[in-house]
Length: 265
Image (cartoon, rainbow, N blue to C red; front, side, top):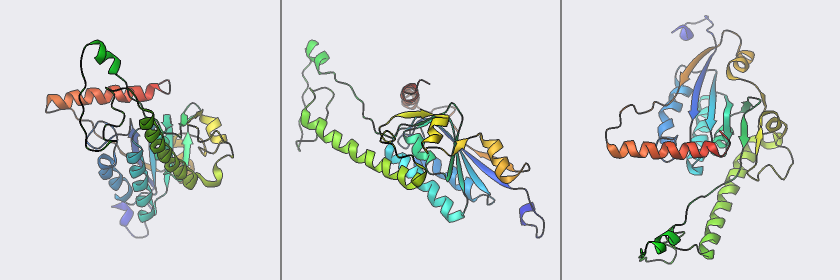
């Protein structure tokens, strides 16, 4: 109420949105555009904050969901004229860095992992195991590419070629996003878009971050010691209603831990 009383100056407010975990499909355990939509809307629109700060700790995930979330952040920032600051914690890599790039400025801890500007596709092949067990795989399709990269059949060169083309297109989209958002801040180095990762200060030297800093001190430096903080974060389900949901949560947890493990976390 204080903010609306004429001639009475109120303390600045920063809305903090926590972006934690892997980025996955809607309905799963990880972050998605659908699950974050109400959170981001409240953060940007409730009480007209002076800034939105993103706490990011994510190893990445779905390129589409990463793009949708980042685009939503930019739209809300433009519509409300509220600046955005990102703060990387343990890791803001791959899709996690895509989210960070939606901010006007990016800060990191000296030990944060940033980068991994690349695309990965991983799977398994079980055709040898099936043969040893005497199991015959039967697949019937309408369309020669419908059984692309079937894990129960030997890998085909033409399937790998198709997948490689798709990954290259996704990689180009990722590169375009980072170049658009970071612009002239980026160092002129051929290694920047190879999927490599960098730690804190080196990431700053390459233009992937604007400085080493933590959320509260940086926000106080920009908005004064009397700045107030409002926190927004996703709520985890406490009691899954169905056994299948519990099983899916367990699988999502394993997949998320595997994503963090790629960065030694």
